[in-house]
Image (cartoon, rainbow, N blue to C red; front, side, top):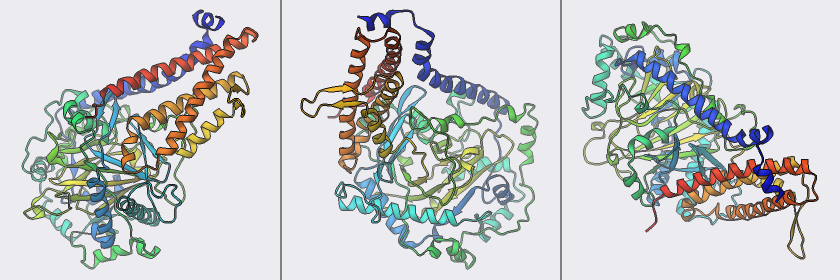
Length: 618
């Protein structure tokens, strides 16, 4: 047949271009970009050698100045500045979600390998929203807020609906609170922290780092990576939370057994009670000044510290490195360009106006259940629960709000012994690819919240340092969803199917137009529906259907639309093989189809390989 012969002819430049467009784009990003990052990281680590970069904690002199000058986008909200009722509802919601088994480990794609996340998680958010990371799309369980018309209100039981609503209330609180922050607003050390800082003024930062590792991690003195020389074993700066830990903390056999039975995902969100606008602002911070929140207070406007004590011992050899840091600084724009898999990517959006978090990613981890936790390799901060990363797929310069809740058992109760005997969880921050600026380590008590504002998430990286107890976190984000909502993909389906006419009497199908541009658009939408939505949902997203059935009917309709697109592909093939068509037009259509079908075949093979990795159900 003509079509078969067309496929067997020497490939034309146009055909080659179309065949390679998708693969070359991905290979350029994942090959050239990732390879360059690895080379630069290797050179930087070789320059550092066995040295540790300094970092400051609240008890160190110069901590406040470092925060003000290098980490000004970070805001801390102590637990005592949030309404007690809000804490109660949010924490009860997180425990409910875990008890119901809604927190699950994801299978993600890291360097062409499938790995399980060490952190258990779930996504909540605006109805029909998704969040994509590491080639995995999460489908949001809707907020179930009273003032939002959620289709299918009976999609989950009352307890789950109440838990989701509580997290929506927390989300509303964060939206209001972050929007009301003014330039320079930042909670920092109180009188107690300053007193500790003064006591440590004469301490040496270098010796302090090793002591900090011991104290915060229960006496573990092994703060240095055993694999210093192996840059590939270092925690990759580009990966998101899941990738680092899933690769290093999860063995295949153990994780497979936990695929359907392990419910440790986190829900660090809290809910905000229905407060008046004035009550959601920093008015509550006045309690700090009155001594109601003993450990921390509002940042003083004028700090007296001028230089971190103890830095010189370590800063000098680091400063003597001859290579310019500009050669090593890497812009991580490629991560944000990965998008949602849209075949026609739009220009990146920039956050402006009032903040509106549209999703929250809930996380849960119990360090006691982990076989091993890696040491933080660059600063000696201690054991890491989550490696260094930027949060990805967010609107540019949008803030991130995090609620942290530590508990000792499933009921949220403390175990025997004083909570002061337990090492608290901490977050570490650093300027991306900068060995001169000291890192920052911030302790988190249960119920504390922190915000990352402005460009902090893009210019800095953060990690989570493990405490002794289990921890939930609720990370509220303005996800880039231009091609990641149900409304979007439904509109794409309508666009493709507008080229298909169905006879109402016979049910037979015919194509409305045979233009090459129309053919290419339809096949791109076809691939997008299959690989970015259907396979993502049936691969992992459907696990949540037993808790909430909101996505079931929309995905069933999406599958029906996909079947019609399969019919359209067959009609296009038939048109190409039809003898009456103009030769040049037939050849151009054949090239378009060959490119689309080649891409489809390769992606289907990749998905077949991924499915083999999933353990079989009993």
